[in-house]
Image (cartoon, rainbow, N blue to C red; front, side):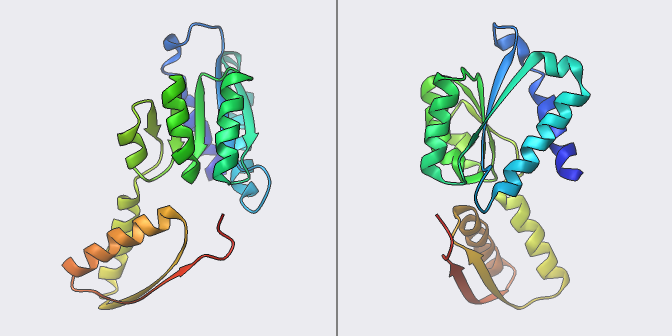
Length: 195
């Protein structure tokens, strides 16, 4: 239920800039995994959007939503963005995590608003049509560091996935460990299953 509340809030956030778009309905295209290993995330997003639209008739009358399955693969994110812009005529694109890396330049070129559910602020800093809708990775890492300090940790080992977001978090944490006199004794990156 928490995911649905988050998505309902997210959709409500999009109601604010309606005057920017000339047609009767604002078209939002979601580029999310609806199949594959990460389908549960995309499914939660889709269900949350649908819940918000079903519960708010005014919102529903002003928005048209389309979904494209990227199977959590970057190449499919690019194809999905192009389809949502050219075929579905979406005014706004919403991408998830690493998909923002390929969607942001497309949205910029096509002059479309892009909302990245992502914690790497570099995307929003590099592309003026992209805004972030998630806490940056530094906030997450600072909380991890706070936990380590509360536990009075002096040595830490890190196991991370090969996702860029994980590397960003742990690179940031590693630099902070030096400031806090915490020794990193091992850092293992798991690449199996990463596309």
